[in-house]
Image (cartoon, rainbow, N blue to C red):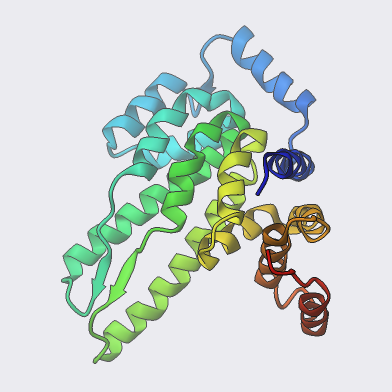
Length: 257
């Protein structure tokens, strides 16, 4: 892709993400003013620093701490670093049919810890954009490996973990969509990927706001741009009519370079 096409695509990303983010600049300004003028924010009768310490220590009150951060919203921006650290930690997949119950339980608890951290980052919003790459990496992480599915218990665990995996990807898509313009480069990298899973995650993040980007790519004079536009549109099936996709592939033909 040429530099001019990259700049134009980047502009479209900005427009799309701006339309997608639900919080207005005015709302963000109100939250910022409150945090600056009222001193340390309070939640559940405790200051923000108390809940940050709970998250860092992962003590018995960590679930309450996540709730407190979610309740405080954008004003809880100092929590971004410890929350991101939780999401970014290495994860060992559940080995279905091999891991013992205690090992599975510990890994499931770890998944829930990350889910809570991502929910808190989502509530913080734009100030949590620095967590974009680790959050996306968590979405694409291998969380389980079906080694042996010979018995009913492991088969049912396999089904449960598939649903959890889908939920975590949806959670990440919703979170990154709230991070605003600063998340654009990471989303662009997803859409530009030749890996279908990464590209589909980018589509899930942008939702209908990916359509102006697709239109721009399909109208481009660059063959690779048009191919990418068709690939992204295909990732939206079955939302796009199958016959339209077939006709589009025939109409938007790339001449040999």
